[in-house]
Length: 362
Ligand SMILES: Nc1ncnc2c1ncn2[C@@H]1O[C@H](COP(=O)(O)OP(=O)(O)OP(=O)(O)O)[C@@H](O)[C@H]1O
Ligand SMILES: [Mg+2]
Image (tube, rainbow, N blue to C red):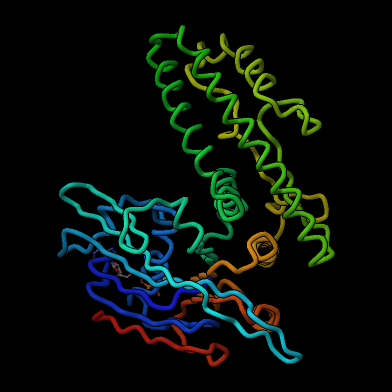
C-alpha cells in the first residue's frame, strides 16, 4: 500500500496543507517546529484511531480552529508482472480515507470512500508503521511501551486482534471498578468469564505472532535476537494450555487476593515482551545497539507483513537521520525498493526520490 496524497486542515500548526507523495522514498524536510512530526501523526491517526503521542484529540486541534480534518488517498500496489530487470507495480485500487474531529461535540469520525467506517475496515487499506528516534529507548526500557508496539504490530497482521483487545480492556475496566469500590463482588465471576474468553484469543494470537516474527528475524539476520513472550498467566507450556477454562480457573483462584489488593492481578494487560540479544535483555545494551536491533525488529516485521498480506505497510520514519544511520538507510533503500517510506528530517538528503520542503507558515 502507498499513500498518494494527503490534505490536512486544523491539525496542530498545520492549518491547511496538501502534500503529494511518490511511491518510493519521500523526505519531508524543514525547520524545527515546521510540522514534520505532525504530518506523520496525521497519517498515523486514521490507521489506529488515535495519535502515537499520548494526547487527547482536542489537544491536536489547531489553537485557532474547532476541528481537524485529514483526508488521504491510499492505493494498493499489487505486483502485476515480473520482467528480468524490474517488477512493475499496478495500482489496483484507490481509496479515500478521512478522519475528522470536532472539539465542541468531542466527535471523532472515520470515513472510507466518504462512508462511515472504523479502524478494522481501514486497516485493510492503510497500515502506517512508525519508527522514531525519540522512542527507541522507550520501547526497550518500558514494558508497557513494548507491549503497545507489539500490539500495533499484531494489529497489522490480524485486524481482528484489536477487537479482542478492546473487549478485554472494557471488561477489565469494569472488573477493576468493582474491585476498587468493593461493589457487586458477586459479579466478578461473570467478568472473569469474559476476560478468560478474550485472554484465550489474545494470548493465542500473541504466541503465534511472536513465533512468526522470531522466525523472520532468524532467517533475515541470522543473529541471536528474539522477542521472549511471557504471558502473565502461569504454567503455559504448550498451545493446548491456552484455553478459556484454564484462564478462568487461574482468575477464580486469584479472587480473594484480588479483592484484598483491589485490582486485577493477572491477564494479557500484564504480559511481558522482552527483547533479547544473545540471551540477554536488550535493556542492558548501549543506546546505539538498542536502536539498531529495534530497527531489525521493524524490518523483520515489514518482511512478515509482506509475507502475510502480499504488500508493504507505509513506513513512517521520524527524524530519520537520528533514527537510522547511513549504512542502514542504504540497506533499506536497496533491499526494499517497493516499500513506501515517508521520512522527516531537518536536513535535505539526496538519497530520497522525492523531497518535500515544509515551510513554517503551512
Ligand atoms: N494544537 C496546536 N495548535 C497549534 N500549534 C500546535 C498545536 N500542537 C502543537 N503545535 C505546534 O506545532 C508545531 C509543529 O510541531 P512538530 O512537532 O510537528 O514540528 P517538527 O517539524 O516535527 O519539529 P522538530 O524538527 O523539532 O521535530 C510546534 O511548534 C508545536 O508547538
Ligand atoms: Mg519532529
